[in-house]
Amino acid sequence: MDQDSRIIVALDCDSRTAFDDTVDRLGDECRFYKVGLELLTAVGPDVVTSLVARGKEVFLDLKLFEIPNSVAGAVRAAGARGVSMVTVHGMGGRGIMSAAVDAARDFPDLRILALTVVTSMTDDDLADIGISDSAEQQVLRLARLADKAGCHGVIASPQDVAALRDALGADALIVTPGVTLPGDSPSEHARPGTPRAALTAGASHVVVGRTVTRATDPAAAFRLVRDTLAV
Ligand code: C5P
Image (cartoon, rainbow, N blue to C red; front, side, top):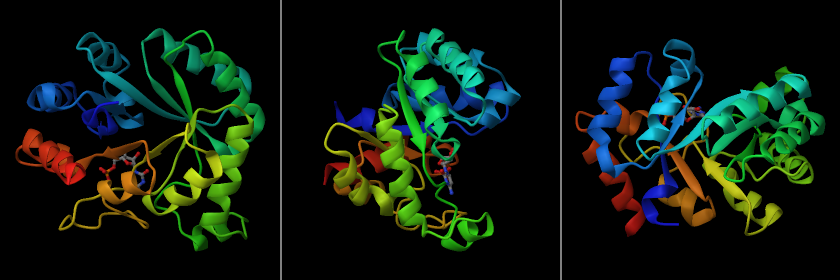
């Protein structure tokens, strides 16, 4: 894998104009984009088709948590659009994750990633929903369950990466959002880290959003992220 493909830019915008503008301005710099619920709902799945037509890889962050039949249908629809990664909630349990994995078998390039604990959640947030384990313990439990269900990898915060790499072995994908560059405002990330720290700890990919997309010059910001990985 070349270095650029390890950086996934999150296109969290709400209009076709903003989408086109960001993708145009990033041009050849960025090869891998994350499409999430905001863009999908505001503009529609044509954005995925457009990205694939431009030769980009797409991580469709659907965060699926539904009955297995509906999860499978959504995964097949994503595969048919040429998506490379789809997310499913680990908290939905083994049945939901297995349904996603089974549905992806018809699409050899499609990877199913389990969301463990979103990076904004703290131990107190988990306690509020009846989970007495720490976020770290819950991440590991759900990651092992995802592995047993056949998921190709997990989404995890920078600080959980090293333990996950130990638990899941060398082949698992570990995709890490919640990364910011030194000097960025902390935003709502409860457990942030730098892209370089995440990759050094064992992440296979990092997801960078506003650090790039809200920069005055997104291509320059992307290069800055890439350069921090080259050191
Ligand atoms: O904060 P940033 O703009 O880099 O976020 C990029 C992506 O990272 C978002 O689309 C979101 O899915 C994910 N994220 C996350 N937890 C947060 C903040 C963002 O998983 N606390």
